[in-house]
Image (cartoon, rainbow, N blue to C red):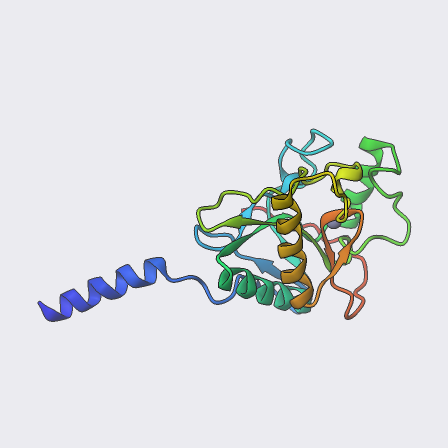
Length: 206
Ligand SMILES: [Zn+2]
């Protein structure tokens, strides 16, 4: 009976235990963020029509990153968790052929960069990210992800104090984990500690 109590207690405990890392190495080139009920929230915008293009351009919602970048994101996850927050992923590695497709759909270099030497998303070394509370409610960041206007600039002052504080929280977590923020998009962070090649690889869906 005692053993059964112990086993039940252990099962209950592990059901609520937070994962220690949120990424899993796939091979030498790629690691993947693990979305589960207690880890980061999967809001991968381009695998859905709820984005600024109103089109689904990814085959499915997987978040791939270069292995060293994934390690930095694991660190961000720990830092966020220590403060009682969950990470929210909007975009990770963006296959280079899909960058072309997005450029064709939007046809406006103000919103999608003309494919040239490629962006850090095409290299698997950038994330579009936000924070949620422990219940999964998104924190107010003063603008939606993908809102391409001044209100998305990190330092834009005409947003609530709460939103300014949340932007600062996200930035502090990400910079401490080794990422570099971007002034014009509060949600975008680059990993600049090494440079990877752009990639055409498109993940499988299963
Ligand atoms: Zn981005």
